[in-house]
Length: 418
Image (cartoon, rainbow, N blue to C red; front, side):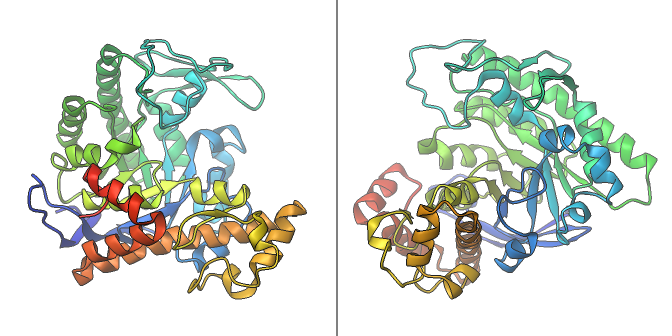
């Protein structure tokens, strides 16, 4: 059994080749994480617009920051000098850092994470329209230009491990190549082998750095499963990483939303049951239910804070925009029965006003609410698994959030409603 993770409750699904959703606990040097859990993203050691204290009060158990961004600004050595990521940003609990692999995709091709597969173009050297290529991948690593000042930098598996060692997060990720869905299958195959070899180098460097500082709290290293939309590639990647001594596993890469639950299932059928699985960059309610039902344990996503900065609000009856005319004279909270700080102290009318007036406080108050909503949703999913009513809770929530017709559509896909 892993000293890092303990499974507590396991659902079994008829017709599924592997057990379904589960609850557990992740142990770190800075505290425990009850799973399933949503991990808010503080890309540059800050969840945009809010205090760390507000994120903690909202129920978050951990935060995730970005190694690429902190390497460029202020520098990993600055963070290390403060005592590591948590101390630097005044966050007392567990922390994650990703490896910078996704930035290779976004800098290299200019694409976002989720891409349609219906494009007529398949290429080994894709670039988004209107974008300049800022990163080049080779078998040893990645050379890239800073998006801040154009300076040239080089990331290899060894550099990523060294940077994340300095940042000092409790949970870190192996350096990987994140492909797009418009890459050819042949490129996906080559990239998967490159990521496999990088994973081995990351493990070796991680162990070497840990041996140099035996008295330092342990960092847990997760390997990242790639493979795009291809079942055989996803399973091969999971088998390769399962054969290595990783403390946990990330499920990453470009994927189509309609296949999310299926892809997670391919992977969790193969990965060791005694290690945690983190789904990178996923945070919408239907996706969370689908992934948890297939055995994912933790999640991170920028959506709650990004949507808040654009005036979008999560509520049990679905997402809406605070700038809508109906909110101008509404003295109700953002969501009924929500106990977040914003809903306890502010009305829709006030938030509509500060949104229209472009006041910064609007981003702060909406982010507090949105992060609390998604963190709380996953907490409720965890409770429903432990209470034996996951299917009932999923049906009730999705029907309320998306409406009966949308819920029926989700059910037809096989991952919305059981």
